[in-house]
Image 1 (cartoon, rainbow, N blue to C red):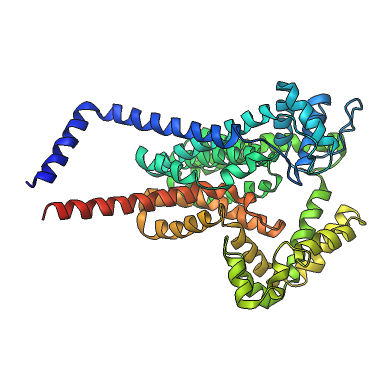
Image 2: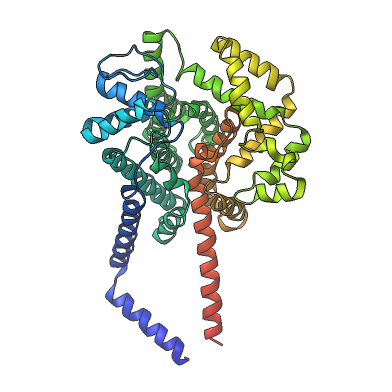
Length: 477
């Protein structure tokens, strides 16, 4: 045995003697937990919270609940109770802001200032400490859910599970929206909990309680992002399509019923409230949907040449520069966000025209004029916008997408690959739904983070094992 190899062997033996398996696991968990908590403190608690253009509607909803216990999208007046209404967004996001306002009076005063002043509300400089602590807790919940998801997929391998958490941390979308009053921190926490419950139910498909919990958490996620209502029936179809192979047809009805009941508990309760108080079976303000559809279906006006260029233009961080060099600034101007863009046309022209109609008439006219008249174009543009929405964190999302292909084909086998695909499928479905109903910006697709993180962890772990094997082989020569 060569001296170098002997020294390594003795060192490994000493480490093994000093740190038995349980101690090593404890050490790994402790270091990982301290590192994650420190990073959350630096990236969230130490950074001030401010506004985005969409923030004010969330603030108004939250303050109306905090002061009057009423959900509405009407403007906030401190001494005037509003009439019940529909919010432009999720109920749970409004509740989150209401909780922050009730817990901390300086936070409430800052939110009131935000409600009174239009974006960017630069005169509002007070603290939002309670909201920052809630955002920090929600990110910690997501990272814990990610760790548990990785344990399920990697069959209890704590090293790869912590590696998945580690590679998720550079994703800028995890931190970017914690600096603003938005629904994304709560959304990513709920999406992580749903995906954890979803995979746990598939691990033990014969237990109806697991499906009940998965459906319940998905229903709560809908109260953060109403567009996730579409995922309920689609995941139920996935369940029926695959779970019977593991539990048999006899128990399939109980399984599906459990998931459906769990999903219906929060969603049906909220729909019932809206019907009783407002006379409508809807999840959010229909004008909010009309705005999203106006922005989205304006993109169906792109030419087929622009559609082809879009596959380069929408590559993350560098695609727009490459497209400009290849085709010229004017050729791709309508694909971006500038004054000549299709988005601005949808916002400033199409949406303004649709606001003159009733919500039902506006929805029918938009669908007829911009989607049903050319379904092939609509499908093609939806695919392009879904492609744009996949790149969470910019290049991080590109690496995650490439690692996903490698992981699916080569790195995972059997049960591990099945669970990873089940982790990916709901997020991919929602990427398609978001591309059909909205302009498909990446923050709508944060549920892709767990699948990408696990794929990157599997790829890095495989590379590390390959390098270690090569090194050991050279030492033995």
